[in-house]
Length: 257
Length: 319
Image (cartoon, rainbow over all chains, first blue to last red; front, side):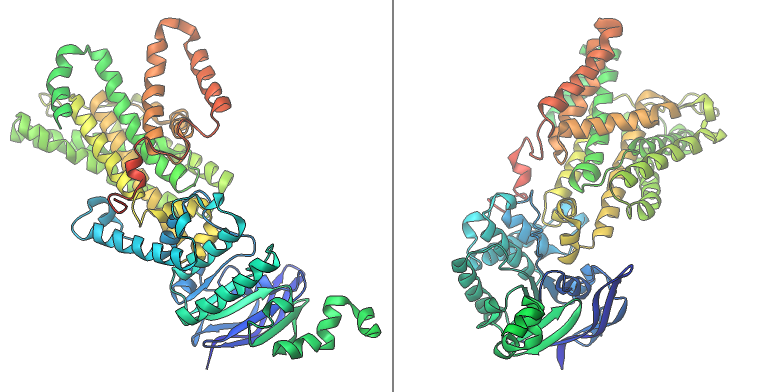
C-alpha cells in the first residue's frame, strides 16, 4: 500500500485553480521527484499535504488515514515533515535551538520547566545531545551556537533539513532544496539526500524545476503543469515525453524537434 | 534571601513612606512588564490591554480580602505569622481570576494577527475596566478601599517592601524558567515563524493561549499586590494609558528580553518621580527620553539579549 496517496485533489483560490484533479501516490521508501515550471502547483500540492491549505476537492491519505484539512501540527505528529522553498528558519534562534524547537514539537513540559524537579535536567541534556547529533550528521556541528540567519545560504538549507528530521518523520517533503545552489553544491546535496534516505529509512518527495537534478537520484518523476499532472514515470522516459518538452520549451520547440 | 530580610527590617527605618511607595510600585511594574514580555516579546503577539488584567486581579483580590479575608484575619488574630501566611491567598486569587479572563479573551482573539490582535486586546482591556466600574460591590466609580465595614480593626494593607520583591522574584524566576527551557522554545518558535513552527509539530494556537494565560495570571498578581500596597484602587489606574506604559517597558527594554523589561520598568517608573523637581517640564523630558531611546536604540535597551547569559543557556544543559 502506498504511504502517501493523493487522489483527485483540486485546490482553488477564488477563480484560480492551482491544482486540478491530481492523482499521486508514493510507496514507502520511495524517492519521487515532483517537477514542473513555475506556477505549476507543486508547492500548493505540498501545502495541502502538510495541512497549510485544506483541499477544495479530493483526498490526501497518509499511512491509510485521511489528512486533508487536518491542522499542520497534527500532520507533522503523524510523520510528515517538510522544508520550505523560501527558507523559513527561526532566524533569531541559534542553529541548535532551531533543531531543539522541532525536537520538542508538541511535547511540552509546562509546569515541569518551572519547578525543574529531578530528571528535568537529564531530559534537557538528552534533547540537546540528540539535536547536536542531527547537526553533526548534516555537517552543521560547527554552527550549533550561531544564529540561524547568520549561516551561509547552503548551510541554512541543510539546517532546514536537520530541523525537519528532528520531528522523526516517515515522509520528508523537500521543496526545492537545490534552489540557488551552484552545480558543485547541487552534487553534494544529491549525495546528502540519498544518504539521509538510507540512514533514516525515509520516504522522500522532492520538488525541483529541473529534471536533470533528479535524474540519478529518484526512481520516479511526476511532472505538473498548470495544476495538472502531465507525466509520471522513470526520469529517462519523462525527459523524452513530448508533453513535458512542450511544457518547458513551448509548442514551437516541439515542432522543431 | 538575605537582601529580602534586610529590606524587610531596614526599609521602614531608612526610607520615608514616599520612597517606599515608589519602590513598591517599581516591584509591581517589574512583574507586570515581565509578564507582558512573555506575550509581546517572547511569543511575538502584540497585546496592548494588559492593564485590564492587572485591574481585574487588583479588584478580585481586594474583594477577596474585604469580604472574606477581613473576617478570617479577625478570627485568627493579626499576628505577624498569620498575616505572612494570609497574604499569598489574595495574590493567587487575583492571579487566577485574571488568568480565567485571559483564557476567555485569548481563545477568540489569538486567531487575529498584528494590528487586529492589538486592537482586540485594547478593547478587551477596556471592557474589563468598564465592567468593573459598574459593579457597586467594589465601589463602582467611587473606587474601592481595602477596609471592611464589619471588621474595622483589621488592617488589610500589606506594607512589607520585602514581600513585594519576594513576589516579584518568584514571578520573574517562574517566567524565566518557562521561557529558557526546551519546552519554552515553542514560544520563541511561534514568534520567529508561525507557519514553520506549526509544520514542525508545534501547536501554535495552544502555545499562544498558554502564553496569554500565564501572562494574565502574573498581571493579576501584580494588580493584587498593587491593591494591597496602596490600600485604595480605582479603575482609572488600569486604563489604556497604563497598558501603553507597560508596552513602553517591554519595547524600550528590548522585545524578547526579560531583563530589559525589568530595567525599563524600574527606570521608567522611577523617572517621573525623580524628575518631579522640574515641575511641568517633567513629562516633556520623559517623552524626550522615550523618543531618544527609539531613535538611538530601536531594538530596545537589550534587544533580544539578556543581562545574564545564564538564562540563555537553558539552565545547566550546556555546562
